[in-house]
Image (cartoon, rainbow, N blue to C red; front, top):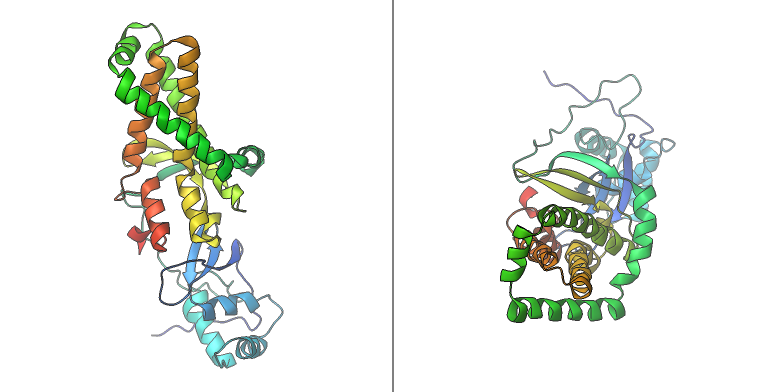
Length: 306
């Protein structure tokens, strides 16, 4: 028996749904449009987006069809609009079901795989992130960024080619409390890394929604919710992806300066661990920062989920 889905005559968006707009600088043959649903983004073609855009709870199917016909290249009838709502927008829970009608069978979302962040716990929200991101965003201006990156590169060249690592590794093994201090600095560097993403997004005109912790593969990991970057251009998204690496470079500059003032060799071990972490995150085959930068360069969001 085939069950028909009741389509509301005056459709309205479901709770938690927000229309974002055109996906900028994508690599798809047909332009994609973005709809946010409770923190997740759904890619849809323009026709579905336009129907959702006109579904305000006041317009009838006839009125929506007339608007579609007048504003796009499609000629739509009320029956066609209703069919699209029943077949696509109701199962995706973009449009709310008719009052008193059973909900349409929802589209099943895949379970989180081993290459997805699990057990996500939000720690900081926009109230804390926004002020800090506003302060740090000036660091992404080219006039500031270029000298800092040159300085970080020069300091690293001195460390690896001139100074060497032996004395620093020996120091962390013999100085009481040095290892604990290194671990503390690595956690602080990780948090600063996330504000690199948040401030880069703010520099481009977006907002980070949260910073938190979770489990990736088998390791604890920080994360920043930068889904707002999907509505920005390609290079703004890439800047956001690489903002964490940039802030790690700034953090290492602070460590080099602290070493120059104090002479504490163990501080340079922190630089070594940070650099190893950057190298690991550049791997393009798992969902680290290098992977997200690659997908945004290609214009295909989250290739592993396609």
